[in-house]
Image 1: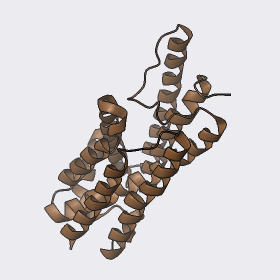
Image 2: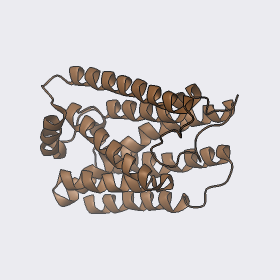
Image 3: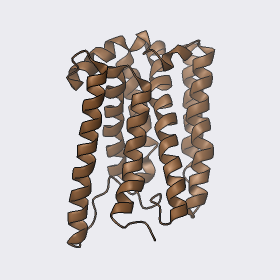
Length: 235
């Protein structure tokens, strides 16, 4: 059963990846298309697989199959036993990093230098107020459904099928990076690092919702807040 559910998730992923190569030219059509496909490929497929396996409780409590990997994640995160303290530290670090990145980007733009980007993001960066609304929805939705799929369902069934949670997270991490191939090699590399960070955060805290929140904040910072403050969006 675990192998069948894993293959079903892989099939949903393949459907999403194959459908992303011929994206329409206009941004709003592209946003709408993504918002139709990603919740189905990642959100619905994960929910159905978890329900069939009787694993819906994994939303609230980290699965026992992840216990060994969670120990390694705690060591990497310097986890001392208080999830709330770790969450506050992560949010503080994220806020400080976002502010520092904004200041560096502002300094480069003021001096006529090219803004540093984690891959080719021009295809999805908003240019108008209408596009900003769509991009915000896309960023939040991605944070929820991608964490549900790549940090819970996919690694869980891979771990149950192979007996190795680390292998499961490794497979999910590679697939997560490849799903962002439209951003180029640099974007895929950034997605690989970000995905590893989300996995460590989830395993160390045991809170999937917190990984979703962090993912959504990262998307909103990079796709909406930072471009708007730097004047990348049209008036």
